[in-house]
Amino acid sequence: MLTKGCPGLRTRPSETARFTDHLWDRTKELRGAIDELEFLRRLGDGTLPLEVFRTYVEQDSLYLAGYSKTLSLLAAKSPDPETARFWAQSAGSAVAVETALHQDLLTGGRIPERTDEPEHSTACLAYVSYLIATAATESYAVGAAAALPCFWIYAEVGRDLAATAAEVLAADPEHPYAQWVSTYGAAEFQESAATARSLVDAAAATAGAKDLAAMETAFVIATRYELMFWDTALHPQPWPAG
Image (cartoon, rainbow, N blue to C red):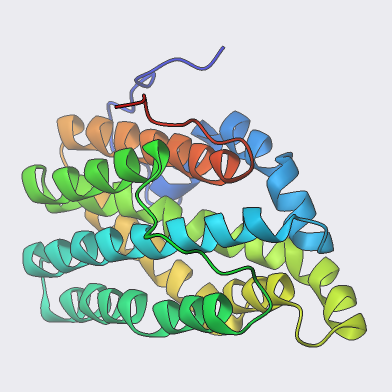
């Protein structure tokens, strides 16, 4: 059973070890559960119901609006100009590039239109609220660790799905699911994920024991939300009535 909190990394990693390697190992069970999600399997092979894909894209758009605020907060707290520039550019990309992709998918005529405005799912609102609160109230290092799973796990999932999506695109070059997968499997996104990871390692190199433990906890919680966010697109958890 997965439990809250973490066993706690009380000392700084050695010079040859990467703190993010520890985070990756710490979330092995969660990442395995993500890899096994029916939603991702059906997204990759193109069999996900259109209305489910629309729900996912809508929630992702709502998520990115909050995530961009998280990245902007990290830019403001960054220890140096280069680090600030990366987070600020990523915040702009979340709003511009990826939002444009979402709008193209939602208005391109391949997905059934919605007549009402979408609202945050329970998982989406919890996730973005956690990220914004962490970036605003915790140290830069802890906020960066919380933001990392969105970069890193998306990059890994996108890369793993790219081969399947290639087959789908070969049969239907306009298939919306394959277009989405191709975006997150692209070299540019992979490079951004690698940079975000390096910045978290750099933050860990100067963090004290308390912040290291808090960074681990933040990464684990955000990874849990990654799992919940994807899973609830196919298996929604409705808000209470009223």
